[in-house]
Length: 358
Image (cartoon, rainbow, N blue to C red):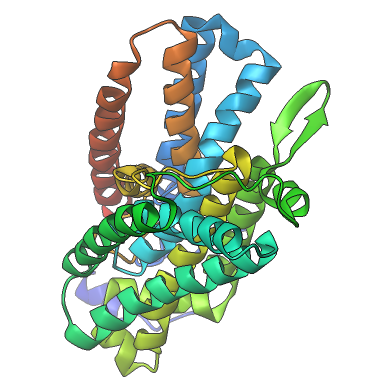
């Protein structure tokens, strides 16, 4: 600005019609960049691409029953991926989530069968056990300051050994006994493992529960104080504590949410197959974490959504079943997952840098 312009008296001149005042600091970013800033946009586009690919590569996918099966596989991953994603947004992750599912199912099955109780007693006790495992993980992490990797790795090994040892001790086998003829089984099966018909296609109830939990998790993250706490402790727990966020409560409750998810999926497995193999669950925790990462959650915390892991879980289910429907060797499944995971991490990194670039 010239000296003449500086000496000119200031005059309040309204902007011309249709014009907006801007000083360069409040300039709004383009819509494309604002969309890229959303953690679920990339995985949504990826899910659409995977769906379109298998619609052409595997014609059976176009059948309604095949799509229902894909959604079922996705839901069993997605129900657990949701609390795992919330935990990751809160800055932690849980390596014991996979075996915790089996622990819950074993508890309900053996307690009901060995003590000849109504299966609902086993279901309720299994819920308490699952919540206790989550609370223990959270409490130990908060009290010791150890990384969640070490805390939950220890829990993973403990539960894996306990699952096998206790099952062999109680049943003299590696699997639990069939509980399908016990009191309360039919009612519990309707809640956790029933099937309903839509347009001539049988759909598992877990698909409904998956979407309900996703909607609830999204509401919690975006519309509640607790959701703000999750993002705050994941971003910087020291700053969060300084402004009054209950860091200890938030961390422990997030691990307990993972415990709740493990209980629900465990009950589904129990009432779907009537029995439980004690050695299962190992490796599933990586699938849950990968679905959350593909869904836009960062391992560093403070960033992510509940919708992203829904699409991440759908991609897993789509690939898992799509390979079978295409007639390919199913051994390629893990290779596809590895490619998707690395691709998602790179895309998330690019999205973050693009969205924050001025």
